[in-house]
Structures are given as C-alpha cells and as structure tokens.
Image 1 (cartoon, rainbow, N blue to C red):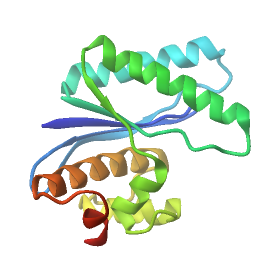
Image 2 (image 1 turned 90 degrees about the horizontal axis):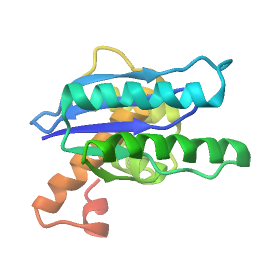
Image 3 (image 1 turned 90 degrees about the vertical axis):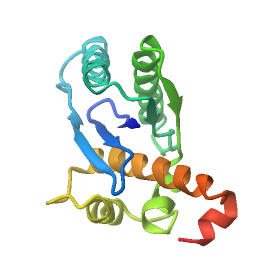
Length: 169
C-alpha cells in the first residue's frame, strides 16, 4: 500500500509518498513552494497541479492531510484551510480515500510526546525512516504524518487501539 502525506501551507506544502513495507519505504518527499509574490489563485493552482502530478505518478491508495492547528494568526489558519481544500480536491478528483491527523497525534506517534518540538519531530522522523539526512521541516511533517498513520494501522491489526496503543510508546 502506498500512501501520500501532505503538510498544507500556502507558502510551503510538504509532501511524502511512503510504501507500507517493513521497514517503511520512502518513495519521495519534498516541498511544493509557489512564489510568495504570486496572486493567491496562481499559488493554489500550483499546489493543486503539483499534488495532482504526485498522485498520478505514485497512485497512492490513501491521501493524508494534516489537520489545521489554530494559530494566533486567524489569516494563517484560514490559508491552511484553503490549501487543505485544494489538496482534498486533488485527491477526490482521483477518487482517493482521505484521512487526517492532528499535529499532536502526529507528534505523539513519532516522538512519544504530543507537544514535541518541530526539531524533535524532524530528527526522529529521519531516524525512524533511516534517511541519510534530516529533511526540510515541511516534508518532515508530511513524512511524520505517514509514520503516524502506518504505526496506528499496524497497532490496530494487532488489536490495539486508543489508549492501549498509546501506552506502548
């Protein structure tokens, strides 16, 4: 099973494509970064087209999009919501299943702490996936999202869910 993970952002949308193998196989990861000076419509179009290209190339069975965290800046929160909608549209146009996890769920799955720092998530994601170097923060978040889903899926196959699964970490 191939899954795609996206960390939505108007300036930088991280992406990851991971295959569910033992150990997990990273197929591709990176950042979609439209020029900040472009109008909103062009930036969203670039995110939509590049996400669509990745989905067409790798043909994942599932698309994961990180949930919105509420920041002190309502405009930033709104922008992330719009990018999530664009990513959802790209997946739904291809009839792909969607799922989401909150930032704290992802941090907990990767580091064992729901309030871990970005640096801790990046470092541990690189170690868990045996990457030769730490990825950029946005792509690390997308990779961590994939790790979160696959770890949860494996625990559920073992019959562990919710608090029981969390206690194992």
